[in-house]
Image (tube, rainbow, N blue to C red; front, side):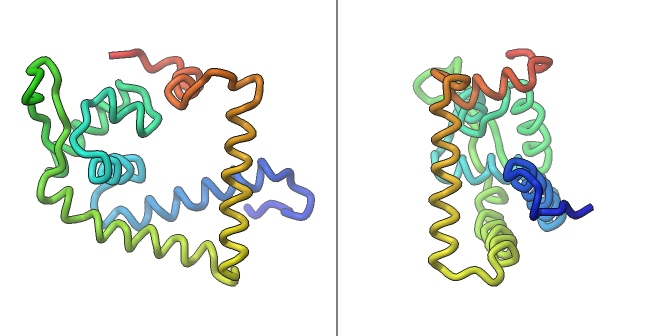
Length: 166
């Protein structure tokens, strides 16, 4: 179902675009036996290093129980391993395996492919302008009185109150 974009509110267009890109990412990531959230976990670990489960959940913007499920599946598939922290044995750090590290470049190609499709017919200046607009919209929402003092963790926990903290 395609929206009549001429009359649709921007929020509806953005929501539909999110659904379309998520579907496309799911389809293209099937090759890796990963979903988009799990791909985000791999990218975060590759950029931020070995994080604890709670740190990783906060960076990704999901609840710790949801992270537990995702990491269990990724560990079973051989993408990550859990190891005790060298300095504090009470903490468990999540590490990329060789398989996890190896698929990062391939996944980057997948996401570039999605962007190429999305930006077909755009001039470079238009892409930069759209990015600036989207970042400004994000900043405006985060600065609104409804979001005052909230971070992504807080927002996620309010959106999904049925998930309990670990």
